[in-house]
Length: 82
Image (tube, rainbow, N blue to C red; front, side, top):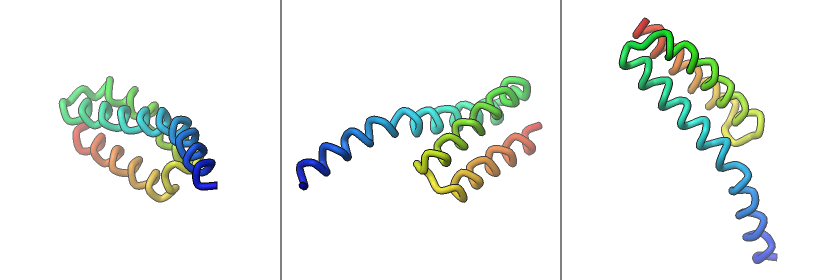
């Protein structure tokens, strides 16, 4: 059963990894754009980052409160640099 569990864990990790990686990449991209002062690009990137965060929360990769915190921090960063 331990071998089966290890096999399942690898499969599940492979399925979850792209979602989590995409979320982290979009968060980083959005925050970099906001910090550099590119408001138009950051605004477009913000909605895609929100979507990626929501998808990760929907698939239970992150807790819904963690998702809310990430979105709030992005919004604060964007509002500060606007």
